[in-house]
Length: 277
Image (cartoon, rainbow, N blue to C red; front, side):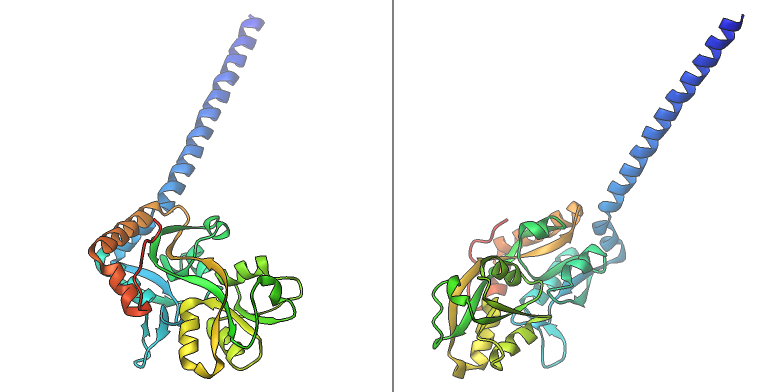
């Protein structure tokens, strides 16, 4: 009799343990499913609100700058409005800098980042990217009177660069120890440091350099060293595959129709060329 009761108690405990295991597994699956739904919610939220928040620059002509009417304009601004138009939603433009554009995306203050964003392994670890929408490259520029033939020649010279920008990352990899990298918070300050004579050289994107050279022809600035050939991509929060694929569809259609090339010709005075997908 006692053995029978002990067996019943053991059987009861065994069933309870199995039920707890099943319940825990179900709860875990529920959390994972919920997290998956939440992670894929950006596109649904945009279409429901009929509005998309897109981060753009205003210190990076001709990609983004403030026009005479005090409104943002440029290639990135046009691209943001183009995507909104194709999605059939209103566009809220959010001004960002090179340093804060990725945090804005991670904290959901922006749905997309269209701000001369190059792709590299560090950024790919924290955000996702669409296909490229425009050409771009970063380089070191300086006066003709200054001989710079290799990165070794940067030793003993000061170079201005925008903190957190791709050129900052790339220059840090190749600059010799005795090179003096002066980091600034935005592109205007970076360029100003060079044009005012605070530094010997400037590391920036080709379009920024071209704009600078047009405004200060007396400096006789020229291309010195290539840092990276880096087309621009649209940044999307990690895991937001539905939104990323929707933007990819719009870019692919824009390439096929010639719209993407028109934007490049309008703002960069050059064709878009073969952009990576």
